[in-house]
Image 1 (cartoon, rainbow over the protein chains, first blue to last red):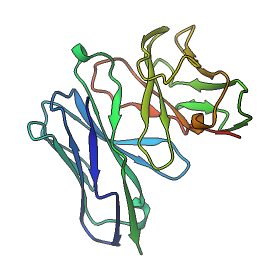
Image 2 (image 1 turned 180 degrees about the horizontal axis):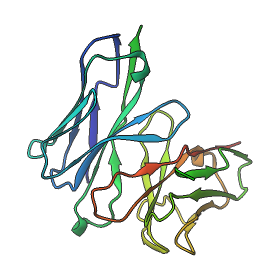
Image 3 (image 1 turned 60 degrees about the vertical axis):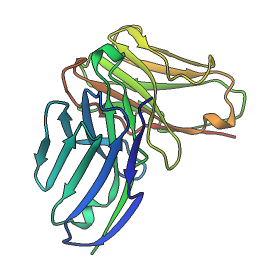
Length: 115
Length: 115
């Protein structure tokens, strides 16, 4: 059974810092890995999707890497801003032969960026 | 609309009542997922539709949970004889088509409270 772990559970940083969020998964047979952002009382917003054959994806100040063989991904946020404060969730899906494209999520990292 | 729409946003019910939660996916999206999110946890998969076909219901916690998508667009999640442990946020997500490395787009969820 796939399990996803995110470390740390919470992180508080001053504005302007670069930071790294970590995600690990137990079964390396994945279809893709997705990073989401969740604001309080809201749904999830997709940030980055990394296909199993890719090593990284970038969008603006965000960069996500994937090391499938070791079961790890990192989300790098450059020059953090107070508006980045949210919970960040990592999720993996399994290959087609494994059933539906359902996502297995970690518990998230709650990020607070202080002005 | 442009995004996934869920209604109601909040639902309070007494233990033992039946509830129905609605999801309007993005127009033209073939895949539709339901997830359950407990407080402080990541979402957990409930069920998956490809058009009107329910292809995976492995995450439904009991036979009190029932989902349908009769015309391949709007979906309804029904919970019969609700219990306190059913209190959670229920999230709906859709994607353009299966196995295309497209991100899942989430609604804001329905927060269900069982008294």
